[in-house]
Length: 409
Image (cartoon, rainbow, N blue to C red):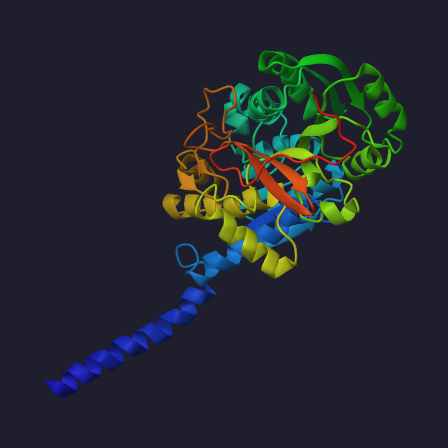
């Protein structure tokens, strides 16, 4: 009996040894990542995706298969992004794609997701049209998911915070909207013009500027002439230049709103500290435990890459886990089965509890937002650090402004 038992144990062990190479020999599940890696908002997308893949692989992969990130640099070009997407789907045989923080690029990719039946999610683009297309033409566009907030949703969060911070706390009454001319700011500005007055801020002027602007002096002169209490921003492609010139020219109005580049930890250095006092919207921040995963991810990212993650990095990290989970639940990388599984996502990521809205919703395949799901933060640069100042229940500090800022008496 003892010999028989020993042989059985040996046989089982040998079976495991022989099975292990076979499991590791299984083809990896490839996820394509397309982003502008030279941009401070773009580089975090592949960086964070690789971190997520490493964690999944260390835990055994997905259904016995490893995750492999295949990264492409789109050089901020929709044409290059489309070529990369086609290569990813047709040559590199990826099972899903995570792409871009730029709305124009995402909108160029979206029809190709339908044509090639390639599951696609964006971790940072904001245009309302991303989800509107899914809603309007679900059969063709169902492969597209929106892993970030839509512009209208962002504006509503910024306005809700403005009512608390700008109106109630600082007694401000007027604003000028200053946004870059881009696809994502069209619905953002439309909602700003609606929700800011509802929050208690009269809009004195609405300025849309070219993303190629290098001299903001005439713009700031025009704003100062209007004498608003605060400048309401909608900037992403630009960011460093207006922030530096705002500080250099000692523009006395606070800058508040959306400044995507300001979400990156390098922005203080990039602006040589000119960003001090700038308040910006984000869905996650390194000083707030939005979920138990937020701060550990931010710290791990900093340890690996030397700086804290920008806004799109949080979502990219979550997106890899969500694709992996969808594949696991679908038991397949069949795109239609992946889409069906992704639609049933209920995942706690770094930015909150993530569920996607149904195809009947205006923001079809967009994030469910609000209490208990994904909501926003307002964060301020103070003395070289990002400090979350809203909402009050998670705020890590109070507002503080540079000496040249004039606040209502």
